[in-house]
Length: 345
Image (cartoon, rainbow, N blue to C red; front, top):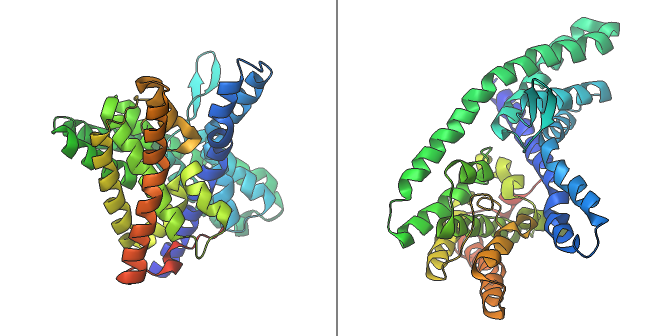
């Protein structure tokens, strides 16, 4: 029974991680580039809207990816995607109609997708030839309705975490930066939204910069350590997209957090020393879409010196730390097996 539950949970987490990446990658790769080019090429404004809009479909992507992990048929797969989207929070119900806004709450999406699969697996042997009528209808009502009811409570969890982090803002700057970098490195490999936390507590200035560098450290640490067992594209997706891709690996092997926390702490220290800046809207992105480095440069100025510091801290330093921690924990100490980083897509 326990083994069956663990297998079910890992399928949900693996599907959720893949869904998040699939929905965020278009905007992460091209969003800032298209924004920068739009003044010179106005036609790109439409493309900017398209790649940015994919962020709001995280719920549908998670639902579909989870359904595929359970080998559901096309009707069931569409149903899980639709149900997860309806409950996830990005689709808001207004008096004047419907509105798509933000990515929604990933915890709600994971839970709803799992519930939808469970409902479908329960209904499948009972409905027979009436599957096309019964499965979409009952799954949306039962799993979607329950997910929507739970949504405010999962949002409350994010809010409480935000309140805890807000208390840290009274700490001395260097200590604050180290703590924020580690905390955001942990958040980015959990179902909690790092961007949502940053906005909720209005994290700005060097705190925002430290949070971003913590996420960058996490992304590069996972990418570099996983290079032996994952494809190049999968490795790159960790820092260009999101380290959430390795969320199931972290939950299965918590010791993977050791190099992540070490590297994030060091990057937090560097954020304090070099006074890396950010805004509440940029906190939680890391290197994704170049939001972190671009917002830092927008604040401190686009000079050659600032550009060099930005490249060193957002790219060079986390790469060096990634290889150093990989050597320490995998090669030297042997505490971590490279297979722990393997991702199945």
